Image (cartoon, rainbow, N blue to C red):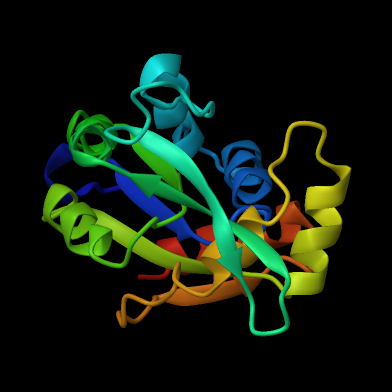
Length: 199
């Protein structure tokens, strides 16, 4: 395989919580004939000290990360949104650079992302500039998302609904989209890898 300047390939998956991004990323690792490093938004959250969020509403979470549980849909259905303060924003931007560093070092990378705000896409674009990136929108009907949330032992109920309205709101075009309710992770992974090879 001829690589762009010795850099690795990047598959960027963006979708709401419980849309199937992680299962798809793991299937890409399994189906690929080259090793893919898996970097996800949960990778970053696992690095955040609990006091600044880290998945828990810690005492300094308002400058880090926290769950905003105040929102409701037009019909009154509650939802949850992940918010970030200045420290959280800095960590998000550092995470973009860290993920890109694997590709710049020659490793293939699958990025499993949920854009918390649309203005994070330009940050990712800058970090990945010059790399061979396949931008993939990971779609899934809300009913299926919420079924998956209900079965997740440690999932946050309402998070998929909360971010579904904004995660694809950046206005950019994807190279391809996949609907994880219409195929197995392995089938979709093979489609993604074929598309990347055919570029």
